[in-house]
Each structure stands twice: as structure tokens, then as C-alpha cells.
Image (cartoon, rainbow, N blue to C red; front, side):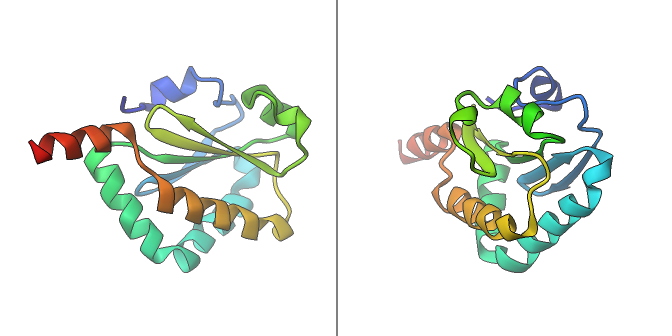
Length: 143
């Protein structure tokens, strides 16, 4: 299922504070305007450190319409509303599959020391990303 912005707005992952976004191919960073500096930092780190992974992810996204959604929640409380069971862990982020998309939620604005964890999480996500619609397309091509 190709997730649309309307579908995202009606999902448990959306927060009304998200009034800004950066779209770069398959990666979509949603944030509140007051977290723009962090969102831009994340965007530039992705550009600097994940070139090969982004190229692969762009091909997957192009074939399936799937995306990787990075949600910078305004507060830890708003983060907890979106990720079931997140209160049991104290990690700075959570990752969940949502339809063909992957959602990476940040527990409020993360500190710089956690940016490497986010980039590594994005790297692993991109390397292992297999949307179901891609598998169907590949199976049909083999027929």
C-alpha cells in the first residue's frame, strides 16, 4: 500500500506539531518548525554518510512508492503516544514497519551524541529494506 500524506496524517505516527518536512527521495523528515536546525543536520548527515545506501533506497522507493519516514517528535510524551511499548525502553528512537514504509521516531529532539545511532539505524534500514510490493513485483517479473 502506497502511503499518502493523508494516510499519514490519520495514523498514530502523525503529530499535529509537524508543520514542516524535508523530502529527499525516499527519506522524509517530519518535524515542528522549532526543530528545523536538527532536521537540517539530519538531512546533511544522510547526504554525507549514506550515499550508496540512498542510491539503493531511491531505486526501491521508485519501484514501490515506499518511503522511510523520520519523525522528530516535539517531546518524549508525544513520541510515547505513537510507539506502543516505547515507555519500557529509554532509547532515543524507535523503528517500526508501517505498510511498505518504515517509520523511525525520535524521542523528542535527540542530542548530538545520538545522531550517530540515528545514521546507523538509517543505514541498517536502507540495507535491509524489502517492501512487500517490491517482492510481488519481483515475483511477477520472474513469471
